[in-house]
Image (tube, rainbow, N blue to C red; front, side, top):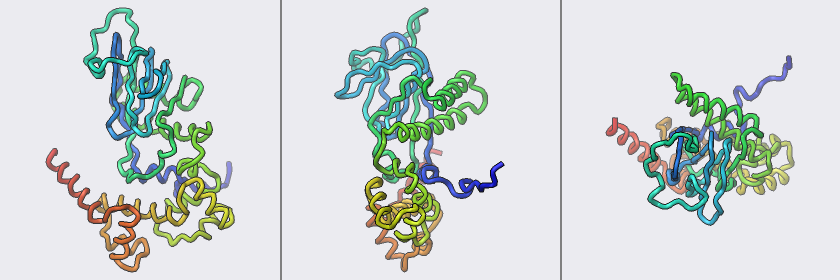
Length: 315
């Protein structure tokens, strides 16, 4: 047994800390069989839709693109919620057919089983985690992706058996699918720039994890470069090249993102946040918050109160 301490128990890696802060949620909202002529449009939710072809065939229609044939085991994810339609035919479906009630199944008629859901960041705050991803992520034939294959098989089994707790289990499996997909995008060379790529970079990831886990620490360029095991200039160039902003600018952005979450959840007052993040006064913090986020702490708190009031009204 190795005596090497497991530092990740108390110090999450960079990607985990981002996903935790952004409060990634998942939900499966369609699990059904389609037959005859059908078309489904699930875009426009401002979330991240995904579709799994569990059985049968389907065609993906996207504006300006030829129809894409889909087979059992194909998984689609739309990181930017681009408009798309899944249909039974390679021909562009008639508008009247989209999301129309399904026809009664006929014996021996070909059927397609779709599992559809979405990923959502509750505290996205325009964080650029997904900016470098393509409009469409496709994994053909999940049998070639062993980890994804196992997750999908478990999801299909849970949906089929519907034992107590299956709804929560399916959503957690979808979350695991999302993280696995992000890893696959990096490992396959699909993403080489942006924050996501930096989170997997062997030099930048430790520095990013340090920033994420201790946002209130008075970080310096030299200190972060040491964590990255790079010289100051090399670290600054590498960070700017991958992430798109300077290291210290990123520190400020992450601090204000964390402050936004704290304001939105009512955890801290503005004065407490100013002290926590090392500002000389509440006014100095308010000014820095506006410069970085484009809004004010008061506006964030008002949105929280509005959501609370709406929840009480609907309750």
